Length: 132
Ligand SMILES: [Zn+2]
Ligand SMILES: [Zn+2]
Image 1: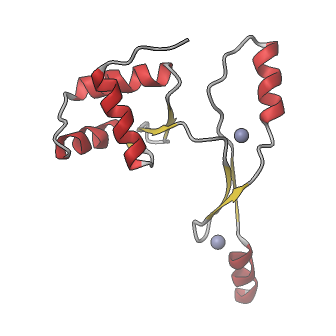
Image 2: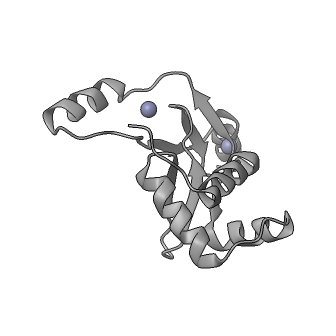
């Protein structure tokens, strides 16, 4: 199904892709203003909502209730080190098969999934050992 996007939605999507990181609606609104593409905050929210429902962007809600938006990435997962914060991309998706199964068994149209791994990288593990 091809969705017709409004001009505001196109602008928002384009900016999200340019920024290429997660951003809140509030910050996006400010970014639009500095790039002289000003639009009302309500329009920003409406556009984000429409893009989300159209499967063009993904949203992640933080524990403080703030929502962060980003364009849907290709199926890529990372190992994130809790100490130094480095993230190591892994080159396979362990849940792709599951996604297909769920899609069929639940008649659910899947847009994306997220999967993150947390722990200590090799470097940080050896630093810990030195301290002991
Ligand atoms: Zn580390
Ligand atoms: Zn995946």
